[in-house]
Image 1 (cartoon, helix red, strand yellow):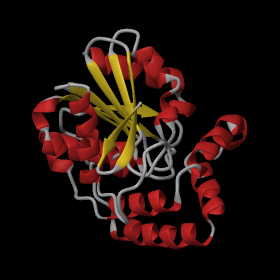
Image 2 (tube, helix red, strand yellow):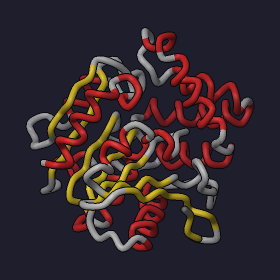
Image 3 (cartoon, helix red, strand yellow):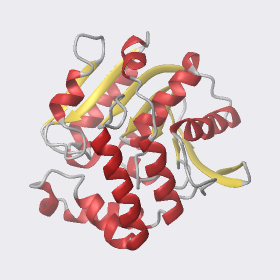
Image 4 (cartoon, helix red, strand yellow):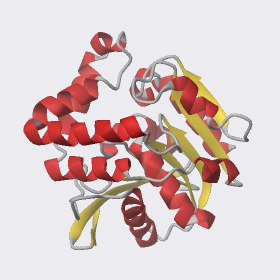
Length: 258
């Protein structure tokens, strides 16, 4: 389904009944990433997935898509569906968007899970890497996407999960050049929301992979230690919905129903 939003098509799905759960995909992903998890949650809950700006079937609206701009698009979908409160599960960039949403619409959020994500801002080195990525994608879109996707998985999983990785690459290649650049620019300039996340008076969970090539495990965990954020560790990489499907589903369902 789509709604018109700022002169573009904004795509979303809406399945099931009950307490609402909003699933927000990561960079180079779209709502198809929830193929396994979504149906499990929708057995007892209302599940909304949204293609964020410049991804999937949602068009771009500018050169930069800040996390706040993406959060506003999410708000437009939920208002259209007349959903006043929901649990939010955000994978990677989707976690950044969920945090921006929670900061702007705090009373709308009943639970927040950062899945292979972080409340921290980009480090100086990470910002430089974003700039390098923007140059690389402009030079060779296909090569950039292919390399970026493979690097999200733990090294030992890149062969055993080849079929799943190929599907992720296919979906990622549908992301337009403008959508990729706009997201990279938005992630690069996002603010640090660590204090905000820790102080949020709702149920919170952080899912981390010990071999995550994107988010260094110890650094990610250390920023929420000594808080009421529940930490769930998996042994693999950045793509827990593929590398640790059963364990992720179990923990997400427990979190939602808590």
